[in-house]
Length: 91
Image (cartoon, rainbow, N blue to C red):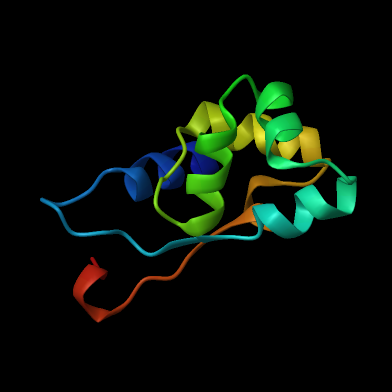
């Protein structure tokens, strides 16, 4: 669990204005649950707009929010969020 949090924290940090390649399947999991963005936001304690921005890839959620969303969906964080590193992001 600590490794997941450290990885997600690193993903959320941006270098300048450069976007980090964090992809998600939140819309799929939300649809499987049969809830709309407003309902998912209420369950997670955020706005509908936040859920929409996450699904579009315009917003990287905090580690806490990522964990909440995974718990609501009944899956792991890795089932929803995927980080795909390219050559310019490799360590």
